Amino acid sequence: KGRLPQFQRKSGPRPVTGAARRPGVESPTMAPRPFVIFDLDGTLCDSRGDIAAAANAGLVACGLPTAPEDVITGFVGDGLGRLVDRTVRHVGGELDQAPAVAEHLLAHYRAHPVAHTRPYPGVDAFLARWAGRDLAVASNKRTELCQAIADHFGWSPHLRHVLGSDWGGPKKPAPDVLLHLADQLGRPPHEGV
Figure 1: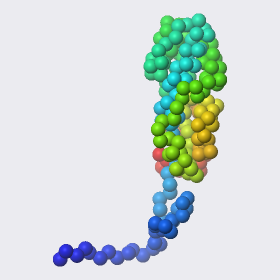
Figure 2 (figure 1 turned 120 degrees about the horizontal axis):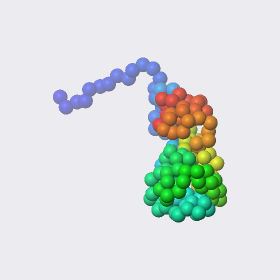
Figure 3 (figure 1 turned 90 degrees about the vertical axis):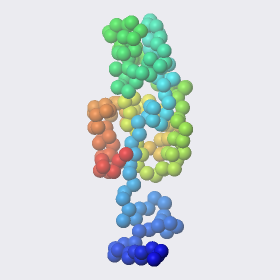
Figure 4 (figure 1 turned 180 degrees about the vertical axis):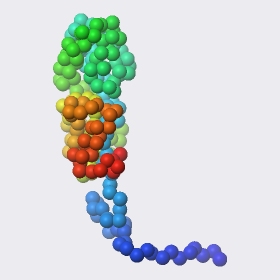
């Protein structure tokens, strides 16, 4: 009475625990470490200010009025084409102006990708702590802009892959880019988060 039952150890390899476990080395009895694919905008960083500034620069260059930041950022998430179409319509422009607005937007954004963009609190520490693991970025922003942001904040050494909307397949929310990244990482999709 009052005694805990004795548990028998099952046969098989003994898991490595505590000080005996070496960082980065997995025991054969442990589940594989998950790989992680992040979105960029709104997940790793707040880029609303730079997106809005670039969109407004594109509008002004085409003789259109500017739009408030919150309106522009409400159009983010479905790629550049839809962002520009929605913004041009919002300010009363014609859709045939959208290609020129997009061209000016991209020129401004390439020149100023991180003027207002900031990492969310804890992102730098998290990426540093997970260094050496399979980490990647998948975004509906163009790859060159994603890479510029990752380079600026020092994240590139922690990321095995950075892919944007120009990766060659459907944009998110279609799962294709995530499946492609899992393949590039040499991992089955079910191991990802």
